[in-house]
Length: 102
Image 1 (cartoon, rainbow, N blue to C red):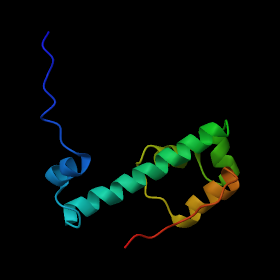
Image 2 (image 1 turned 60 degrees about the horizontal axis):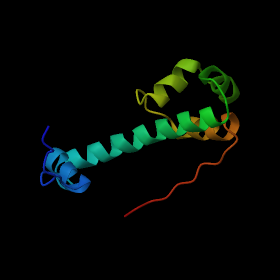
Image 3 (image 1 turned 180 degrees about the horizontal axis):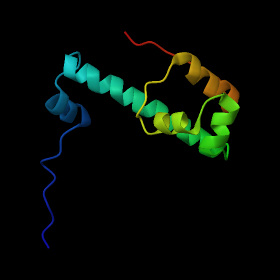
Image 4 (image 1 turned 90 degrees about the horizontal axis):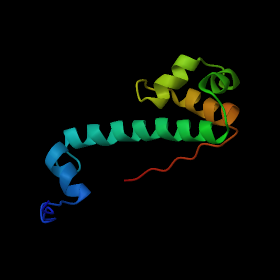
């Protein structure tokens, strides 16, 4: 079996430029926003697992439903900031920090 040459490799930024357009373009901005939403779901899921909580347990502690937690973790739901803060504070015992990039 012949090994493939690696000269077809491109950087992640070049890949994103080709697939979604240059940074700042509407398509790229939409991708970036959706990716941030996806990351929030992954962070919630990982924190929940580290705390050895089921989705049901996290929902009960947070005052929401298992279905809502599942939708957040699977990137199928927009999440309100107040609910995100409550899930992190009351459900996970953590604190939410923000940063802005310009």
